[in-house]
Image 1 (cartoon, rainbow, N blue to C red):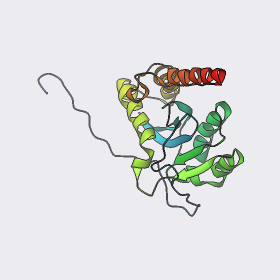
Image 2: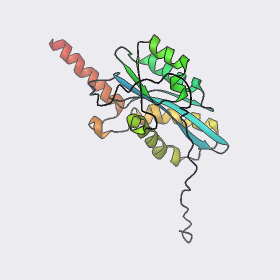
Image 3: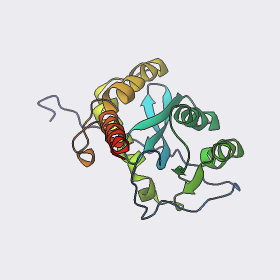
Image 4: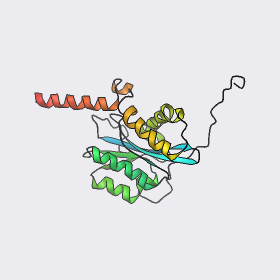
Length: 207
């Protein structure tokens, strides 16, 4: 590797984005073994980070489990509750929330009174993973893995502005509109949702 000028990627210290050391109310897991039949039945929310030259940038995202579409996201310099609320507000503004379950970890961003109030005000049921159990939120984790492997690791992000410029493009134009998912019949999320809507319309016409 030295002779060829190849450098291995150094494994850096893991940065936790979940602070579950609080006295806020914890809700039960409502999605375990739950079978979905359509979109806007379960959203999963989570937060990850991107390392830049002088620190970190944090990304909150909300994914519709059925279509794998990112329905809300936010980018910030801190792990504040505002970050999670901004992503949630984006999702609520563009999607249906009746009969919806919102699933997350037990982090303080998702258990704080302001976040919980928004969920309850919109009639959204609240579900949370068991403490220290990442598998219940695997869909959000899978998206973050894709985001980093197919976008972040390919670019030299140096500043907060770099992240703000690139991440929305990847989420909206690449991931939601172009990236194929085997679980969706090798279609991107937006196309899959469009087909669902068209099929639903045909069924209504028949009825």
